[in-house]
Amino acid sequence: MSTTPELLGFHHLGITVRDVDASEAWYGQTLGLVRAFVEKHDNDTGYAVVMTRPGTTFFLGLDHHHEADRQFFDARRTGLDHLALAASSGDEVRSWVAHFDELGVEHGPLHETDDPMPLVMVQLHDPDGIPIEIIWTGM
Image (tube, rainbow, N blue to C red):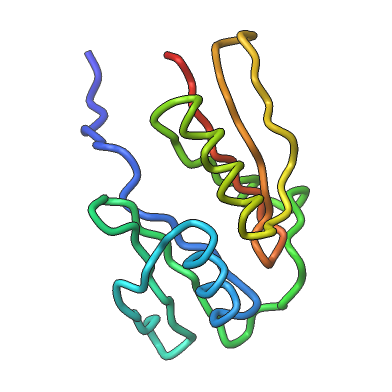
């Protein structure tokens, strides 16, 4: 018998970025996100530009901390390793690749496999070097 309370899934993700304006423009153009609102951090330590994909419950906070180190992302540091965004089908991932190509956005090769599960995936990096996967799994 578990006493762990229920979770419904992720509500939002906040990532610290080096340049909020550049990141907002990139996430807007590349992933179709729009600004939902700006939220001031407690104790005036910075703020977050919160973006959303219209018609979804997906929210991404682009956080500016006044005292951030402004270093390029490194997955070997403790914390975030990558961000994976779900696509509705393998064909939808392929559409994303075509979209990135049309925009001239650099990305990795399309990866398709059945091991360890059916999946189609492409990876790209945001302006801070954070790896983003667009992925469909057939499970």
